[in-house]
Amino acid sequence: MPYIAREWLNLAIRWFHVFAGIMWIGQTYFFTWLDRRFSQEKQVWMVHSGGFYIVEKQKVPEMLPGTLHWFKWEAALTWLSGLTLLFLVYYNGKLMNDPDVWNVSNARATAVSVGFLIGAWILYDLLWVSPIAKQEMAGVVLSYALLVVAIYASTRLFSHRAAYMQIGAMMGTLMAANVWMRILPAQRQLIAATKAGTEPDMRLASVARQRSKHNTFMVVPVVFIMISNHFPVSTYGHDHAWIILSALVLVGWGVAHLIRSH
Image (cartoon, rainbow, N blue to C red; front, side):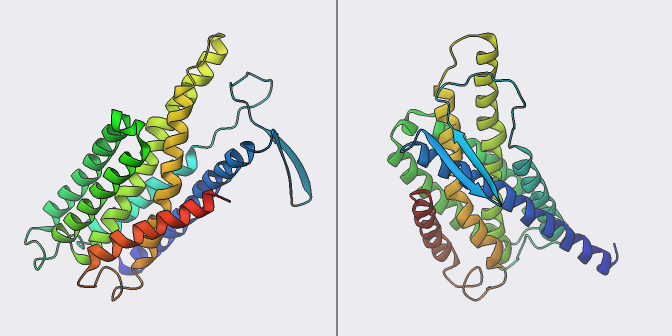
């Protein structure tokens, strides 16, 4: 592929990826804000762009006439465009390996990267469906410890630049998988039970809410990683790159906590 065509393709996919991400995370934080308001009010009255809106929350779903609106394609499009960028820039661009870090071929580093993404979801999901998840703080501490291990391992397996992107891709994959593997199936089962006239299992709603909450925390570090490419001296190129990213994940989680609290 000619260089100019490759560059335009890269730019177009990045543009699409960022915009899809804005739509996905924007609506996630919007519904997070709504949930918090409903803990204090029965109805939420809003105004935007000259329109006035009254929204109320149903604790138990009821089938009402009209269209049920789903919010799902933003997550899929964000993840697919991000994966396309990972392939285009790092896998196909041969930026995954660095002989000074780990002397393997780019193909092998790419295979390890893919396995890393799949394994991360399996481990994360098993953790949060295990009894540990009933003690949220214990789950958070263990999740952070595993994330630090993943960050350290990435800096020892991939090139410095690719290591940060690997962690960003990993968390982005967890977020998208949360939507498609946990949140949407739970919502479908709740709706199916309501249509059938049976009592819906509200534990499914708790699972969906928990995974959505996780996504609001993961996205802040992911956005940092997206822009870290422009600051190599302070981030992935630093001698203590894994410590910097590990610390900034905590900063991002703190910021997410503040956003969720207001």
